[in-house]
Structures are given as structure tokens and as C-alpha cells.
Amino acid sequence: MIYITGDTHGEMNRLNTTAFPEQKSLTKEDVVIICGDFGLVWDYRGESPFERHWLDWLEQKTFTTVFVDGNHECFARLKEYPVRKWRGGSVHEIRPSVLHLMRGEIFEISKKRIFAFGGASSHDMPDGLLDPEKDAGKIKSFRKRCDKYYRVIGQTWWSEELPSQEEMERGRNNLETCGNQVDFIVTHSPSDSVLRLVGEGDGKRDILTEYLEEIKQKAAYRKWFCGHLHCDRSVSPSEEILYERIVRIL
Image (spheres, helix red, strand yellow):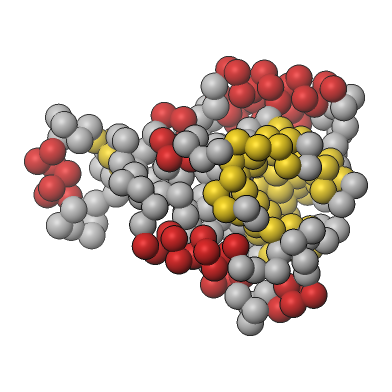
């Protein structure tokens, strides 16, 4: 079985047995996918006690947890985890059954092909993107306030939130290898056209949304799931934005 949900931001209560009782009949062969902003590889100083507790909690679950990266991940740490092959694609192994689906990879789960591509632009920093060296005083001041929304380079923001040319080319090549046909696409960011449909397009177009629009036009797929927008909404019969819902797709 395959289940999928939206951004978790380190909050895993939706996957407890009360909120998600279906897990009682699952095994490690069954998969729960998180559409980015996983949030348990976040502390730039290293794996925190909070992260360790919840990662171990997920590891003890009956199912396997996988996620694409969002724009709220510590990319400096994420890339340090060991890379291994899993169901046809490359993953970072956070725990043996807690896995990061690397960008542009195609995975075969329950005999279905799933194209994964994480990342998104951060738009939650109206008070600035700050440099820890140049803006130390401002950062210290902001941390005492709850009305400031900002990010700090290398601590809460990384340029890797948007893809490299190599990652995008890997995605194109992998899709071409399977004739540009997959069963499901899982991303964090929506494509350009989805952003326009939900009224979130102004000023938010970027290299990734354009790339995903290219994929949308070239690939054949049954369903595309994304997160990022913090809403649960069916955009079309083949496109769905997820946040708190957990959906069984197979």
C-alpha cells in the first residue's frame, strides 16, 4: 500500500495510531510519502534530541516513511547522510526505513513508477534573508520578537532549496528512460500552472516551477501530488495539493 500526505514540519502526530489507524495492518513493504518540509533534518547544529526522538519513533513504525525535500530542510545535513539504492532510485538513508527521495529519481513501489522532485522557494521571510556574520546584531534583536519572519543563511536557509542544473537534467533523463510515462509524480513545489490556478502565482515563479511545468507538459502520469501551499485541495482530476490529509493512492 502507498499513502501520501503533505508538509509535516517535524510534527508527526498525524501518523500516530489514532489519526492514522490504517497503519495497524501495514508492514515495512508499505510506504507513507511526505510531500516535503519533513522537518526532522532541520537543526543546522546536528541531530537534536527532538529530531532523534521522532526519527526513532518513525523507525519503529510498521511502515516505511519516505519524503521529498521541501524548503524547510537543512540541506547541509541532508547531503551528509549515506546514499543507497531503494526500489530503483537513489535515497539518503536517515534511518533504515526513513528515507529521503533524491531529486529526479524514479522509484518503483507496489509495481507503480513514482517520479520524485523536491525543493521550493522560501517566501516566508518578509523581514529578510540575513547573513550570520554581517547581520549578527539584527538576528539577536529579531530572536527576542515573535512578529519577525526571517531566515538566516546556513542556519534556517540554504540555496539548495532550488535545484541544480544537474538535478533537473537527471530528472529529464530518467523520465526519458521510461518513455516519459510514470504513474505518480510527487513534488513539494507546485508547477507554474497550478500556482496560477490557486491564485498563488504572482511573484512566485522560479526556475523550479518552470521546470515542473516542463515536466507536466512532457510526462504522462495518473496523479501529481505536491505540498508547500498549506492547504488540501484538488486542483484537477490529476493534480492534488496536500497538507494535513493522508490519502491512500494504492
